[in-house]
Image (cartoon, rainbow, N blue to C red; front, side, top):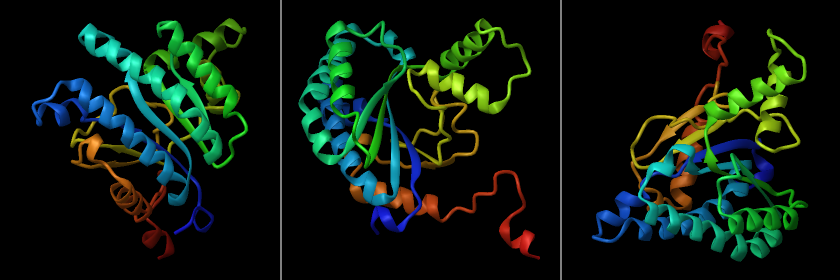
Amino acid sequence: MSAQQVNTVHAAVIMDGNGRWAQARGLPRTFGHREGAKTVRRAVEAAPNLGIDTLTLYAFSSDNWVRPKPEISALMRLFHRHLRSETAELVDMGVRLSLVGRRDRLPRKVQDAAASAEEATAGGTRLHLRLAIDYSARDLLVRAADELASNGLRPPFGRDSFAEALGRAMGEDEPARDVDVLIRTSGEQRLSDFLLWECAYAEFVFTDRLWPDFDAEDFAACMREFRGRDRRYGACPSSVAAG
């Protein structure tokens, strides 16, 4: 099924299981992160043909800073290397890249590589790839509320105005967009402070596959499950409404 044959969706993925994948093989956790980076490429290549026009990947939570320093350093090197090495390919694929989350705590070379990648891919229209790095949904919600208050606005805020403020808090020029489907790998079933506002009516699909093993067919299977759901947004089931 081509991207033109299906409605476009915003898919979000919690890429979980890199460390467990490595440990199950007697390898350091950093090996799992390296393999997980290869899975990111597979997911980006597959997404447009699955009807996805926006793909948000949870790469590093703000709570992950408590992990061992060697693992964090390895992750930052990995972000830097792949932001630089994958940019040309993203341009060729028509992918626009953007980072969401805090940037001030990232190493300067990661910040610079991200800015260069965003500038180079700004014209991409086939897929919007959003990497959530040093990301906390709760922190962003607070930041959006602070921004509205600093502009002289007082509650009650409208949903549209809050979504616009949340988008700005993430460094984007558009309102925060609702997530249609959230996928989490490795069998865990929680949001982990990811896209709390945007997932208000998201469909959740959980898979036991560890992220390094997650391939294009797994992605397609998750999307088939999603498309088989009856999304009601608080209304009655379609069969009841028809009766």
